[in-house]
Structure formats: structure tokens, C-alpha cells
Image 1: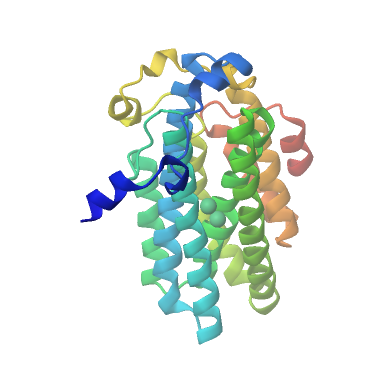
Image 2: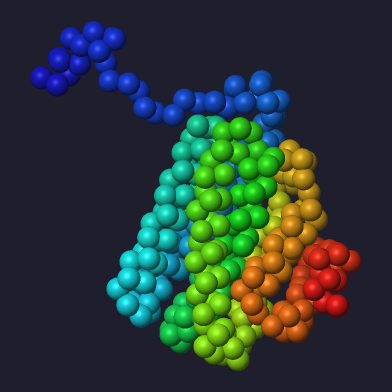
Length: 284
Ligand SMILES: [Fe+2]
Ligand SMILES: [Fe+2]
């Protein structure tokens, strides 16, 4: 009966098709983007989704540790926003006709999740906030800022929307950490040191166009991915990530003597530019 009534419905009375239109060929012609650009975006957006999945899991794991119902609700809301980001990014891939993984593929994400779970098992809320709200959100902000600046108009406007949320998540973490520093400076600095030496190498190693497994799963050739398709390069992104991380630690009110030593230790991360002005400013 349903199918008969659909057949009888005149075309102009049919419900609007709300499925996103495939805009890949329009972007290719109007914005002069080649297939390499879409392969690069499949890689970046899949890793972004992995970061969002990690955030959903981290926030969910934190809820039982939150001291009262209001803060449990607040933390659940952050997790819900991250879940929305997964759907938004997946629909961008559909619209641009490239595959987006909807699971964590690269080992770094699982490693960070393991560190986070250790902090939860230790009931160490400061470390949880530092890993998710300061470190995770800082890197997310760098990524979405670059996509907003250098992506095609569709990608840029979606990145701008997500970026707004991530800036809010960072602010949430900053105010929590500022409070914790005021209450227990030594303990909170210990949490920072513990998280920094474990999580930052993992996050920085994700700033790369090579992978462990992701390209294989996407069916793209690692060697063919180049950031020139986004008019940028790895060093430029690493410098921006380092600058933003330094800014985050500064805004949180951590002791500059302690953060300078931590930032200096990042020189040992592969590919981090050591002669960088932001780095030397923090160190000296
Ligand atoms: Fe997010
Ligand atoms: Fe976030």
C-alpha cells in the first residue's frame, strides 16, 4: 500500500531528498583540487574521526570520576559533542566521495587511550583533564584551524563549526586545571609531567603523512600523500602545534620553569623543528 501511494504521488509533491549531494566534481573543477587532495583528506579526516572517537571514550570514562551530578552532565555533554563531530566528518567524506574510517586504526590512539585509562584507574582527574582537554583538544584545534584555512569551502566551513566546539572544550579544561593548580600545585605539575612524556610523543607522531595501517585500510598509497595539496607542509604544522601547546600550558598557569623543560624534551621527537623561535622562547 505504501509503495502504491508513492507511485501515485506527483513528482512536485514528493518529499525533498535530504541526502547530501556529491560535490566532488564541482570542487575539482571550481576549486582546482585533484584526486591527490581527496586522498589526503580521506587520510586526515579518518585520523580526525579516530581522535573524536578517542575523545568520546575519554569523556565517557571520566563521568564516574566527576564529583557531582552537574559536572557529570557537563562531561557527558562534551562527549555528545564529540560524537556529533564523528557524524559531521563522516558525512563530509560521503559528500566528497572518499572513504572515512569510523574506528581508531593507528596504534597511537590506542596507546593514548591506555594512558588515559591508567589515570582513571588511579582516580587522577588532573591527568584526565590534561590528556583530553589540554593535549587532545590543542591538537584538534590545530588540525581544524588548518582545514578551515586551507581546505575547500565545504571542508573549511565544517572545520570552522567543529573548531568552535573544540575551543570551548579547551576552555573547560583550562578552567578546571587552573582550579586544580590553585588547590594542589605540586600534584597537578606531577600529572602534567606524567602525561606529557607519554601522550605528547604519540600525538606528535600523528602529524605525518605516513602511517602504520591507515593508508592500507583506505586503499591509498602512503608515498603519494603530500601536504602541498593543502598548501602546507609537515614542519609548518609541527611548528603551529608546538606553538599552540606552549600557549595552552601558559594559559593553564603552569610554572614556566617546569614547562620549559618539558618543551625542551620535545626536541627529541622525530621531525620536530628544534631551532624554532617559539621553542627557544619557552626554553630561555
Ligand atoms: Fe571533537
Ligand atoms: Fe573536543
